[in-house]
Amino acid sequence: MSIRIQVLLVEDDEISAQAARTLLERLGCVVDHAADGAAAISLFSQQSYDLILMDCQMPRMDGLETTAKIRNMAQGWVTPIVGTSSNLSRLQCLDAGMNDIMPKPFLLSALKMTLAKWTLWEEDFNAGIYSRLSL
Image (cartoon, rainbow, N blue to C red):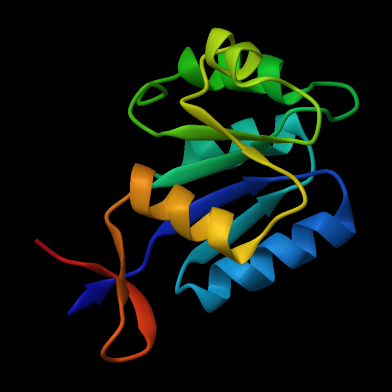
């Protein structure tokens, strides 16, 4: 039996969010979308996620500040947070409490690598599907 990866996608650009959601769902993930940091904090307080993809540059509360607030919440250090940015360095993301960085624009290959690195996601080549295998 496979269990689907729960991803919180924090992205203020609707086109980027839709592209990422489409790719993640194609990879077998269940995706919740937050358009800003406040919405991300609200969703995180209500549900557990296997991974958070965090836009680093958003209006009002950017991804760095949002990450700091999530890290101060119960279970905040359990969930991997991967920053998504076209112009911040990996070091800036790590200093903010993120686990890693993934460049934009969203690419299928980068999402596969991120899922494989930070979750129990596996690609099932025989079935042609993507899944998280239960242990």
